[in-house]
Length: 309
Image (tube, rainbow, N blue to C red):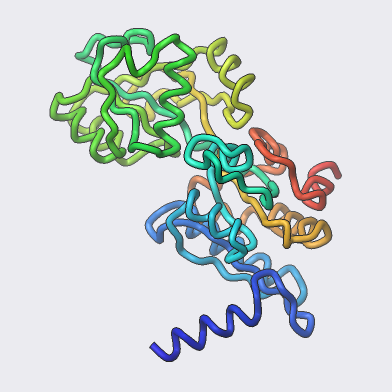
């Protein structure tokens, strides 16, 4: 207990993002140890420590995006891996950040897609999102980013919750309900292939409902955090590729990270992408060329400078 208290006191004295005798301390908020953000954040901290003189960066396991943004707001961390849609809500004070706008958040880079997948079973006869009217639909956990995605995608097709029997279920709950016949379709937002969908596909023929290009363009015009993607044929045993939209995992910083340090951080990470890509398969989609795609907030000026070089 005493050692925990001492570590806490030392951390408070050192301060996030402060420098001491040439040392720069940076805390990176990631996610759960079993998720994608944690190993990627760990690789990032190693790169920063190796490539920036005097750097002392550490990655910490957290409750992921919403928790990370709140920690950033309160000055507990300096960098965070987050979803770009939830970051947009935070910066604009909407959705789960209604009345709790976050002012001190800046973009470093967008990283890789987390795809909005609309899953049904082939035997249900549901072929398009428009066919979901009157159906039992799992739309994500109440107040989650996935639930906001579901609501926005349905609205692009003129569908509201008045038109469906909405079920507020997590990914795993939705997968079980779909297999058991308790829902007709489920929305989830995650990198593909997603374990929950693979589990369904191992016992059932699944169908992914497409978000057609025109609908995707309308969504992107309204919500700048979305990007268009194609889920390849064979991902869950499908014979054809499926048009979809994604949100993006992204790296953000607090306003404590000045422009010069922002430039150093971005240069170090994006000139050593191979080390990040070795940490998790999802990171193979991170590229310098795609690093401002789906950027929903103003960027740290140093990071922006790097991408313009």
